[in-house]
Amino acid sequence: MSQKNEWPLWEIFVRGQHGLAHRHVGSLHAADAEMALNNARDVYTRRNEGLSIWCVPAAAITASAPSEKGPLFEPSNSKVYRHPTFYDIPKEIGNM
Image 1 (cartoon, rainbow, N blue to C red):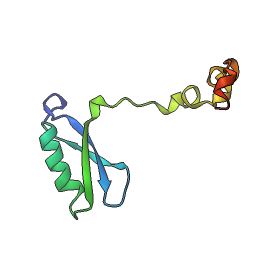
Image 2 (image 1 turned 90 degrees about the vertical axis):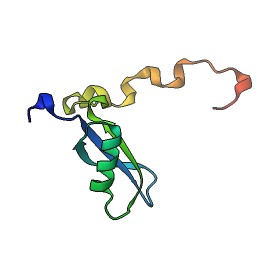
Image 3 (image 1 turned 180 degrees about the vertical axis):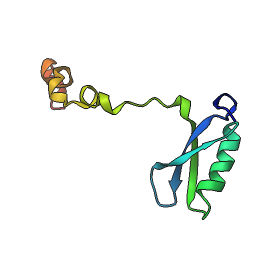
């Protein structure tokens, strides 16, 4: 099957029985969201360990590249606008 005829790729996230957040567990190809959800249930929650499943089209995810690490994650010290020192806070507000 050529890439042109492949079903879309879906990224699968599962929230475990005792977890508070969903975690990425893998990827799969499916024709639509319902098929992705059913296949994800069969593949990634075989032992009844999940409470919730998210199926996200991989094409809908925007990710940073490792080469962008410096500009994207540099310390906020170099971004002076993030510090409240440039704002006048009225005395009636008190401490924030």
